[in-house]
Amino acid sequence: MGFYQVYSQNKGKRLEPDDENGLETKAVLARDLTLRFFGRAIQLYTPMYLANYCDNSCVYCGFNIKNNIERRKLSLDEVAAEARFISSTGLKHILILTGEDRSESPLEYIKDCIKVLKGYFSSISVEIYPLSEPEYASLVAAGVDGLTIYQEVYDEEIYSKVHPAGPKKDYLFRLDAPERGARAGMRSVNIGALLGLNDWKTEAFMLGLHAQYLQDKFPDVEIGVSLPRIRPQVSGFKPAYAVNDRDLAQIIIYLRLKLPRLSISLSTRESASLRENLIPLGITRISAGSSTLVGGHTLEGAPESAQFKIQDQRSIEEIKTMLYKLGYQPVLKDWMPI
Image 1 (tube, rainbow, N blue to C red):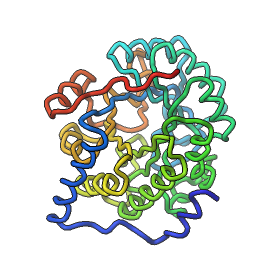
Image 2 (cartoon, rainbow, N blue to C red; image 1 turned 180 degrees about the vertical axis):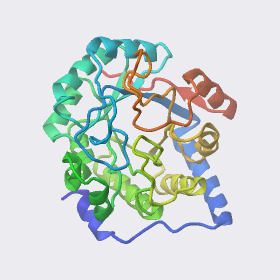
Image 3 (cartoon, one colour; image 1 turned 135 degrees about the vertical axis):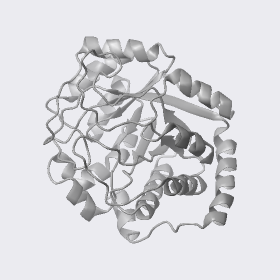
Image 4 (cartoon, rainbow, N blue to C red; image 1 turned 90 degrees about the horizontal axis):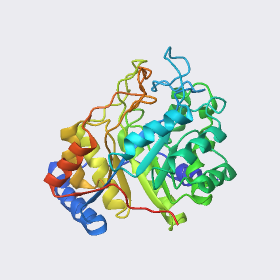
């Protein structure tokens, strides 16, 4: 049963919050551990949205099938235009995303896009609907080296409520997807919980447990986590649980102390000032120059239907400048396939 057995054995456990003095002490330890294992290198990447069609009814997502938004997917020529624009900034790591609709964004379409993208990027990661192990293997053969897939929320009852209909309602198939991707040959696997759907102390504990399980089972795979907080989107969904900036900092510190080799990503969902303050606590990857629109970098008249609103809208050059000022080295490429 994979991680589900571990999850079941640890139901009810959660992260215990620290007081101010305890958190400050742990923050110093987390900073020192990050420098020891990662130095001052911060990897940059950007998302590229290929499509926004979706079969799911996730209550928190702008791509919800019931939302009245303009839907489209990029042609291969449009994919090439987006790739040329993004790669011209120097970035060589790309994360491609689609809504979870196999009919509108079939695997063959995604592979065709990958063929185009391989001419521009050394590392291609996917954030798409969960696949079988042979399907993941076919993506690896096509040139994909990274998988990002969020469980969204580990609590099964809440998971069922926020995913009322669609293929995503299958909790276990999604929970096992990171393992299928790792077995299929993905070089990196990135997981995450959408903060705000449940008590953050419970979700942070389970996320750390899941990451540890994957690290132990797949020592040759780079395991990472992302920590997205729910952002405003077209449905107007309001999170049931508050997750403030201090809470987010505590999650980062906890994960770094628990798993010193863990890659931790922080996206443009967060504000510029907050991202700068959180980087020293354990962040190793950040997105830059982001758009959550299909064709948002180059497509004139791109659908005004973002998956969510971003906060840090700085360009890649501005992000690089910020990192240099903080004493960090922005890394635009750290992987070259054989």
